[in-house]
Length: 247
Length: 258
Image 1 (cartoon, rainbow over the protein chains, first blue to last red):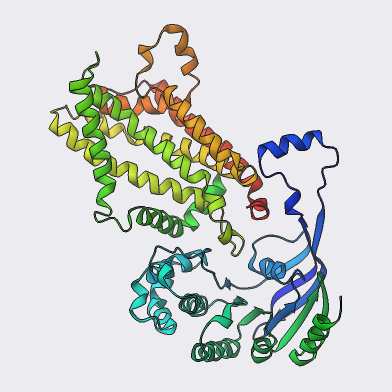
Image 2: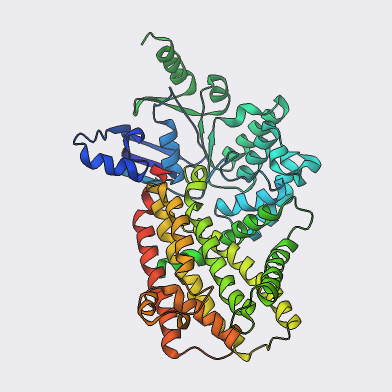
């Protein structure tokens, strides 16, 4: 067993977006206003954890708890304000419509662009193209523009690319809930297969049921802190108490 | 600068794929598809030729060719810049999800427009043949102004694409600057048409040296002076260096502002 993801005392601070000058006009007017009103927001307040290979980690928490920030740090979208994030191996986030997919291009064309964006070479992608198409099960729709896809079809293609391309770390943000029951089963089987081959998965979700079904370990975040870290049943119970307690 | 070339080399397949994507999307769903990349400049040149050889006549021999030889590179410059200024902001969703080299987005816009530009040289050949205009050996000199043009445009693109992340006004300002810049560049005229006192002003315009290179090679058929070549290449390289340094300095924070 070796460590794939290591967070050490990670702090992430954001500028509150609303207060930032969006145009030159605001930048100018700001000069004349003394109280510029820039406020900082702490999304993560010094969290530490490690994930090993073969582990499926669920991240749960209320809105604004820091789940997505943690996911972005794992993806390497930005560096932490302070602390250390260490990642070993290739990371593949599941890509949403509007991000890496172009609506006017066909599914097949999008597979190539997506794979390249995820950091794989054209050769590697072409070798896996057929497997990706087969697993997504889109039939002849694979040669239609992606904008004609239903959200379920789209999700199947995204999941198929992200898993077939075989990264060491797979990041899944919520979207698994879109597919039908049959595809959900296929996904769960594939996720188990991932674990067997010593890969790491980080899964962010609000659905207690799917977290319980998939994860070996769950971390509960609240206000940028780790409230609980342990087996799914324990942590999910804690989460449900948190959600249902009066604010 | 070295990092830029490393980044380009590492991401060459992705840049190429994104550039082709941009072109494919531009011509998608049109019956003629990619043919438009040839037909569009051809029609424009035919119109210019008809207008300037029959309706409006200037003292310049073959004014249409004179004009087109500088208009094509100018069109590349202005279109590539307009596309690339928006390129970072347009890919915001992607930047927020995945770690990618930010430079690929302006570069892909540049490459897409470069392909368009190079394709437009084919209809130019057709027009030259049709007009029995001499085909000068100096065409082999074209790579020099081409490289200068590409470097210069890339430098501007990096700078404005980065600035546009922080101030969205930049993309509007660029449009205005481009339309003014067009008249301050020797496209419709050449520098020796101007009264002496304005020539000095024009010498500060980097596009002068680059456009001159194209016009010399295609229209006049003789080589530009060594100073002109050196000026266009070094202005291109310096602009790229400056533009990319600004881009690199701020690229880490793009994700928080897009």
